[in-house]
Each structure stands twice: as structure tokens, then as C-alpha cells.
Image (tube, rainbow, N blue to C red; front, side, top):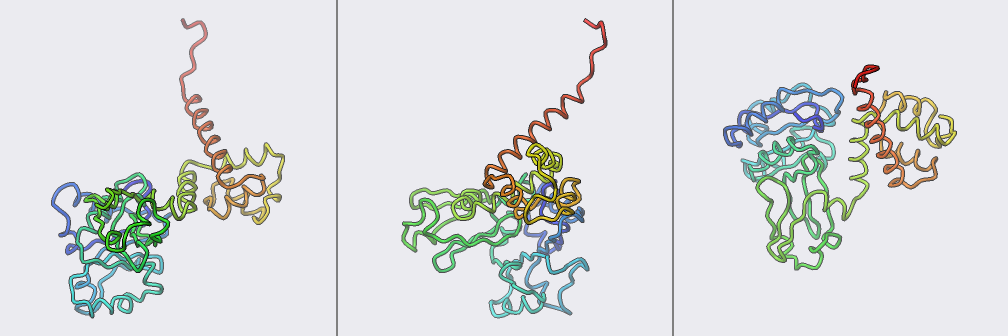
Length: 291
């Protein structure tokens, strides 16, 4: 599993494993099953509807909880699918459950987990009313209004609905106008805050604490002067005991009299500088008199 995987645990049954071609993809799927990251809150179940709806009820791992996402391949009649939310005991199933008759969703999801940023993979997509609904590689389900999408907003409804998902989930393709849109383009068009959150999670993996402390210290500010955050929370952020979130980043930005993009840009520069200093410190020191 990549270091950036959004899932703490993954359940993929032999039935859904059969939707993958033999070879590297099945090996990747087994790596996902065998891996575990307790620091990530969300888990994932990939299963067929027939397995979930028949017999004595779903045979699910004991780690399934209110954060678990479900990707279900529909291999039963439509009326039976209506039972899935109740059988799985889901609250807000539209956020946690995606059902598709295309077994290719399993392949695209597994492929997404091999990306440096799994959300960049497109697992599935469909049109609902006048919006495009996309399931991303981190199993978030996002809705994009047609009129806000570049090069797509002026299409007829018939042309809007006539798109294809690229085989590996890299982009959606509309033959009309030869339009290609990947996940980042879709999100930039309607929800730049999502990409901000992705950047913050990336920074969190790069040990952001020292950069935060430096930014605050250079401004002569105390930990108590970050409005909206308690001194304890700021202290924990600067000791890497908790991760930086969008909400906390916005409060730091406001305290520093920056907008969020300016704050992130400065944070990025400092992380780069700290990385350069760390590499320099690891270089061998030449011996005196060596020439």
C-alpha cells in the first residue's frame, strides 16, 4: 500500500478479486488486504451485492465501523439492491456506499491505490439530474454541477451524459468536443478547498511542526495568540501530536494576516528550506587538511 493510502484496512473478497485480471493487479489487491495503518480512520469494503444480501447476512470484518466506505458490484436484481443500506446498517448511505454494475470499478479502485495521491484516480461516474457525480480513488463521492465544468457546461444534456471513463481511471472523456477532465481539473473547477486539504495532508506527512513554530516565532507571537485555537492545541500541532487540518490552517493564516493560499505557499517554502538544511547536515564533513 502506498504511504498516502486513505484506508486503514481493506476487505476484498475472493468474489470481487475475480473481477481483476491475473497478475500485478491481483498482487496489488492482496497487498491492500494485508496492509494496516491505524493512523488512518477510514476503512474500505469491496464486495459483491450477492455476497452481502444472501445467506445469514454479510460476513464482514469486525473492524467495520461508521467510517467504513463500501464499493459494491451489483450482481442482483434492482429491487434487492434497495436492501443494502439496511443490511449494512448505514447512516447517510449516499456518502458511504457506491453500487455499480460495472465490475471495472474494482480495477480502477485498486489502480488508484498505486497513485501517489489516490484521490486522483476516478473509480466511477454518472450523471444525476444536471450534475456529474464522481467516485474518486479515496472513495469520496463528489457532485459537480454541469454549468461549472470547463468545456462541458454548454453541452446538450444528451452529449453531457455521453462520456466514457478512461480504462485506468485517469480521466473522463467526452467525444463531443474531445474533452478530457481528470479529478484535479474537476475539483479545481468547483471545490478548490478540497485540493487545499490535500496539500495540508501532504504537508502533515512532511513534518510540518517545525515550520509552524518558525512562522509563529518569527512574527513574535505566542501560542495563545492564534485566534480560535487553544494554547494546548497549538502546542500539540508544534510537537506533531496532532495533524494540521484545513480549519487549523485557516486560523493560523488569519493570525498571520495571510489568506489561506499565502499561508500554504509560505509553509511550502519553509518545508523545502528545512528539507535542504536536513540534507546538508547529512553530508560528510571534510577532514582538516584534506585536499
